Length: 135
Image 1 (tube, one colour):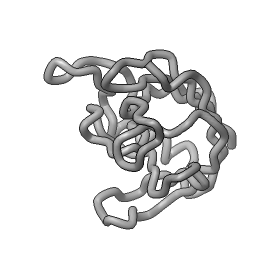
Image 2 (tube, rainbow, N blue to C red):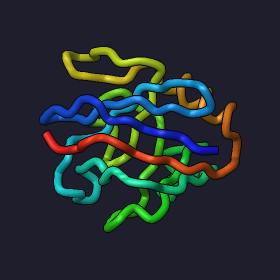
Image 3 (cartoon, rainbow, N blue to C red):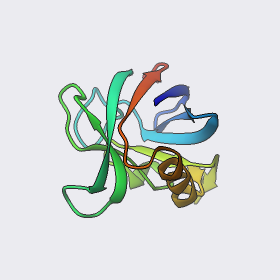
Image 4 (cartoon, helix red, strand yellow):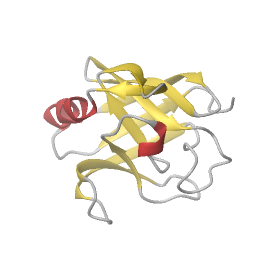
């Protein structure tokens, strides 16, 4: 399967977009561009392979997708979370955008991640990320 993430809103705090997979659209949120520095920056736009991961290396996240071969980075996941502070360089997924605690957010994140898992299962997929990550 192929999925596309289109980044269409860049702020000083976050990069927002939409992930299109198998006819479904999900909202995404990433940390702002910080020159691809591990744990604080979104990743560069490009093409990636995403592999199902039953459990992250830290054990914190279960049943997520791991992006392989991110230049200069490792441990980049697609996982549940709502605010930019919930990600350390990963992609958060939600059913829609909104505001929580006065901050841009993705909402219904666990539901969205489960929907993605229901569609893809434990298979790998290709993810193409388009759009500027620079504010």
